[in-house]
Each structure stands twice: as C-alpha cells, then as structure tokens.
Image (cartoon, rainbow over all chains, first blue to last red):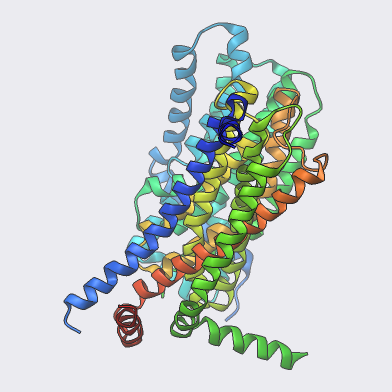
Length: 52
Length: 224
Length: 257
C-alpha cells in the first residue's frame, strides 16, 4: 500500500511537475478566495469603528 | 438647421491639420523616432547584411507600431482640456464623423511620416526592392488600424497618463504586427502575400465603424 | 412572447439589484462552494490517480487536467465579460458592470495558471520551459489583454465610469481574440512546422477524456463560486455608504457569531 502510494506520488520521475502544477492551481485559487473575503472583512471593520 | 455631413467632416479635418502643421514637432517626431529605433538594431545586434535583411520586417513593424502610438493621446486630450470637445459634442452633428475625422487627421500626421521613414529604413536594412510595395501597402493598412485603436485608447484614458493608452492598445495591436510582418517576410521569400493584405483590409473595414462607435462611447463616459 | 421577455427582464433586473442579490447570494454561496469543491475534487482525483497512463508522455500528461480547463476558462471568461460589457454599454445595468470587474481578475488568474502549467509541462516534453508554440503564445496575449483591462479599471477613480470603460475594452477584446488566434497560427506555420501539439483532444481515449470533462465542469463551478464572492465584496465596497449594507451585512455578521 505504501509502496503503491509513493509510486503514485513519484510517477516515474514526473511527479514533481504534476504536483507543482497542482500547487500553483491551488495557490492562485486560494489567493482568489482570500482577497474578496479580506475586502469584505475590512469594510466590516471600518463600519464597526464608525460607530454603528 | 441641417448642415452637410461632408462639410462638417472636412471642417474638422482642415482645422486639425492646420493645428498640426503650425507645430512641426507633431509630424517630425514620429519620423525621427522611427529612424532612431530602426538604427538601434544594427548597432545592438550586428551590421551583417543577411542577418539584417531577415530581421527587417519585424524591426520596421515594431518601430511603426511604437511611433504611431507616440503621440496618440493628443488626439483628444488638448480639445478635451480647453473645452472644444464639449462644444463638438453639443452640436447636433454626428459625433461618429468627428471621431473619424480626428483619426484620419492623426493618420495623416503620423502615418505618412512613418511611410517615409520606412522607405528610408528599407534601404538601410537592405530590404530587396521587390518587397518595397507590399511593405508600403501593409503599412498603410496597419498604421490606419493603429490610429483607430490608438484613438480608442486615448478616449478611454482621457485626462490620464499618456503611457496608459499605449499599454491598453499594444496587446490589441498584435494581429496587425503579425500580419504586417507576414506580408513583408513572404514578399522577401517570394511567396504569395495577398491573403495577409486582404485580412488586414478586412480588419480595417470592420475597425472603422466598430472602433469609431466604441470611441464615441468612450468619450461620452467623460460627460456624465 | 413579449410577456415572457418582459417577465425575464423584470426578474433579472429585480434579482440583479445589489441588495437583493446580496441577500439571495448569501444563501446560495455555501451550496455553490460545496458543489463546486466536490465536482472539482472528483475531477482532480479521477484525472490524477485513476486515469490511465499515456503511452507516449507517461504520467506528465496528467497536467492536462489542470492546464486545459484553465485555458478554456481563460477564454470563456473573456466571452462572459464581453456579454456583460454589451449589457453594461447598452442597458447600463449596474450589476453587470460590477460583474465584469469581478470576472476580470479571475480570468487573469486562470490564464496565468494555464501559462504556468503550460510551461511546466513544456519542461519534460520539449526540454525547455518556454516554446513559442501557437497556443502558448495566444494565451500569453490573452493574459496581456486581461492586464490591460485590469490596469484601465484600477486607473480610473469613478468606478461606474471604469466599469463602462472596461466593457468597451472587453468588447474590442472579444472581437480581436479570434483574429489573434488565427494570426498566431499563421505566424507559427510561417516560422516553424508544427511538430507536436500540446493536447490532441479528439484523439484522446475516452478513459482520459471523461475526467477532463468533469474537470472542466468543476472549473466552471469554481469560477461561479469565485465570481459570486468577488461580486459580493464589490457590491459592499461600492455601496458601503448606503443603509442596506450596514443593516443587512452587519446583521448577518452578528448572527454568524
């Protein structure tokens, strides 16, 4: 089982390329999720400090 | 009162040309800029004849694109600053005609010097004489399309920095660059180039009504 | 017929009004997130772990499940933006202007993903990080167009004006994209014979093709999710001085805590 898993991760030496691609994808999508939520939070905080 | 559209068109064209001719820098700057950019390539790369000949289409076209965008923001910005543009839009005349006249004027004061400069550069870059005519034809079509695109960029970035309009316009000018270099390099290699010229003409034919209308829309953004 | 049209028009206008949109999207957003993440994960796991190995390229071809959907998304988001741009220019619908602004950054992100994964894929197959292949080149130009659109929007202070400015730009973009693709193809054949194409979709085995379809669907759902998030942030940002924002948004936040 462990052998099998490491074979999948290694992918005959090409694994690094595939995993880096996946990492890039998740990273950029993550930034896209993080930025709007940070923007919303910022406005929320501003509203709060303005005394509502 | 209903005046003739042609009269209106020629009135604006004449006015803009007159303003441009009173200030000689408007039509000399693109010419000099073009020649300087072209002369940099042999200096930076190699003065070898065959090498320069293979490089020539690209060099001439890059210089043409850059120098046609050099003064593009002046198409509308001066009239916008002193309020003349407001007056033009207040009149009952179609604003489409106004934009087209301004684009044509810009092409006359930058496109024609570019053609002259490219004729000189074709000599200093050792272009064969047979490729001279296709180069001029493609440059006429291409620089006019660049003037249209530049007018749109200038209208969108009205009152903003001049570099913004170039950054907006340059990605959209890539098909013109590719087609233009394809025409010249096919002519050098004695291949058929008419197809590329026809595509450039088709782009211009769609661009004149389409881009002029969008430019009108972009100018109107500033009057709300 | 006209009654149906009027109904559609009034319904979309009503649902698209910022306060109402904010209300119903806050209910729909969790569901959208769950569905999109499930489909996305199914596609990824199926593609990367269970699809057969390509006999020519080995396992590296599995990048296709990331590269091709993001390239497709990069193009179709520009098309989406052009449709929104047309609506903004013609009918001046407020929310479509915000939509086009929110979609621009997502489209640029997907195009960037396609570029990066394409060049990572190029390293083991071509031996270099970058090849001036026709598809990679036109994707690069697409990325430049996105940056031009985003740059124009951020340079204008009046945001409704900026919306309409980028609508115009995206309309030009959608008209010029087919020309760019065609001319890049010609340019490519003029300079070098096409020896190897990155992805030959029609000749793919069904075992490889089916996970790709799931991946594309998952990417579209992710796009819808990201777009909704971006749009909500945009709406609150634009209308933060209006009373409905402070009422609804603050109330929701309190209920969450």
